[in-house]
Length: 546
Image (tube, rainbow, N blue to C red):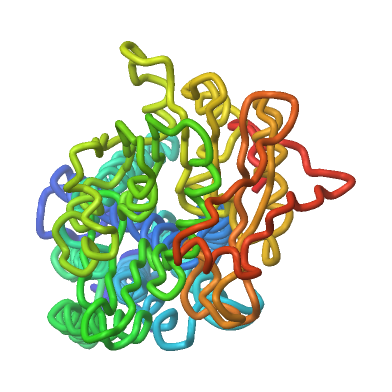
């Protein structure tokens, strides 16, 4: 016969609702649980932001990636909360297991995603296969574990001191939301700039497993049997060992992954405040390639054709004052300076680090003709949209030529630079009779985006002449804003030349010069491309259409 007053065996949790046997006073124990809630919430939000950031960087289209990651995670959090109900009788052990798994999966997620991207040839293909599926899997797994935290923590805090459900929920969610705030601010302002994505996420996993393990092994160890305590300790030490080993090897991993993505001749790799910059080649006869956030921006084999096609048609006419929006690599400025009669070239570039590299890297400076050493060139470090909106116009009547050498319109961060409002500001910056030229992406690969750019420029009150230029051969990398390793089918670059008036400007090119002869050997379409009968509507800030 069982004696109901006999003491429970060691490791047996107390009956539900009974206070837990704590090594500290209840008030102190409650504070420690809420502190753990705070830390776990901060770590959880860092995992979410890390997945959004790395998906946006590797795949592009940050709005889509954020929507996919966050929606999957929120759904998974609901499922995780329901699943955690089965663990309520073993809340301490369940919470420790959840935190160890979350630290391992969340801490290693960035490295795993980048490894798959680097060694499987990119993110092309269907959503059902490849790295995109892995992104959804990480979002689902992390969401499940984050969702399981709250019910278990609620059980633990109620075990310390029974209180009304509303008060317990208020306390727990207050600590959770404040922790999320701290994690959300720490990710962009501390972890990314000082540690980078990989090391920052590994450190977050370390904090996560230490906080969860310390709470359970320190505060609720009497709820666990001796065997459970040792199992939990070994599991946490193993997770810490994995994360620490990955942190030690992260430098070698980044170099190996970078070589897998960009090739073996990576010469410069740096992270500025704006983007990652990678230079390959440029020595021993190898063509120089410039990658910005993983996208080929300057291809040594074809960059002259691209920049000549961008600049020279717009320079046919008055060109004493020229404004270049973007173009921090200096290539567009090089082509502008080839024309006599240029008095001033203003370059508005967001990334000062790119300008410094274009000034001082021997191979890149040689490729841009040391354009930044020319006294006519003046650089403004600013966002092009805000610079056009706020820069004073005193002292001159406007620019004869405005060249928009900007990232591809398909990249979410660039959408405002291809909006009707932006082209309205560019039109205001033009002198009477001035010309605007815009890089509008590949016509063949993404015709709708190209014609949307043309329609948007027309909506801003400018008459347009669309044109394109083909690569030197059918196998060139598809333009300055397409990821390396994509389709090797024939590609082109599309441009729109525009001016105020009722008719688009004529497409004129100088007849002499070896580079321009190369352009005109069947590559540049002299006649304006035929606009589709049902053209797309313009893109605006409140209704982007790319």
